[in-house]
Amino acid sequence: MNRICAGISRASRFSPNRESNDNAVFSQVAEYLRENGWDVRLYSEAEFIDQTQDEQYIFHMAREESTIDRLEKLEQACAVVVNPARSIKNCRRDILTSLLLEGGIPYPRSFTAETSCAIEELMQKNGMSACWLKRADMHTLHPDDVCFAPTTDIARKHWTAFAMRGIERVVVNEHLSGDLIKFYGVTDEPFFFWCYPRQGGCDKFGHERINGAPAQYTFKETDLQDLCIQAARQLGVCIYGGDAIVSPDGSIHIIDLNDWPSFSPCLHEAVTHIGRAIIKKFNR
Image (cartoon, rainbow, N blue to C red; front, side, top):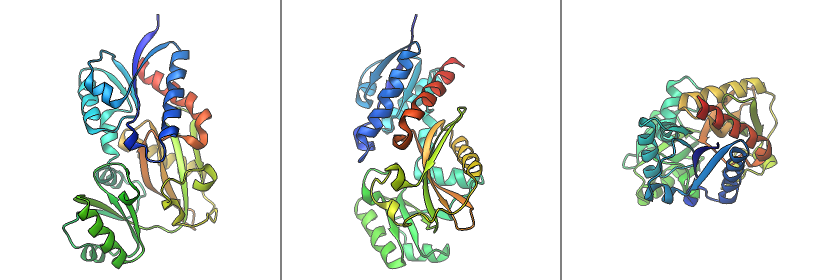
């Protein structure tokens, strides 16, 4: 007899310019689970919140705060949830920044501040010139949620714009020169993939162009994979992706990590590993 699990798709507002990609990986993983003996019941985030479900095994791409809160309560009642609810909260930029720095993960010099403060003074205090300003309280929903500031004057303009939009806290990351790369991984599975953004068709808001065409600096791929695994474990996510910078000397810094991205450059290979990882979690 098939075992029963619930699958929760991602609300469209959390998939800017990526809705079809996110839907593709979600639906293909659901099909993989069906092919491997699971009765999969699918819900949108709104349906999951509005209805009463009794499934004890749940996989999801959810990001609405109310959805994550409910998943956390279900976990406390012994439901198995992939990715765990706490790990989704850990991917908030302010929490992510603190956890990666606390865990010793190579990460840009960073601070989080209220938009009511003077950004010029904060940048000077932290010895920063060029930097990235990132909305602290959630994932990127809008192009202006992440802004590059090559100078203090431009940082001030972006800072003011955040405040005018009602965004109270912003993470400030030091800009790192080097090759930008995208990575995708599944813990406890022999799967890891990386690419340069334009090669993988990963350009979402154009931010990927700031670092320019990749110089293809030499680095150890095993070092990249080990670092990404460490970062994912620090946050508690098992299905993940993100961004890193490879410096001219081959050193690597994680600059972002997200729960369950679209895996679009490696979708067909990734689906099997994602599905297997979910089933392993369900069977423990």
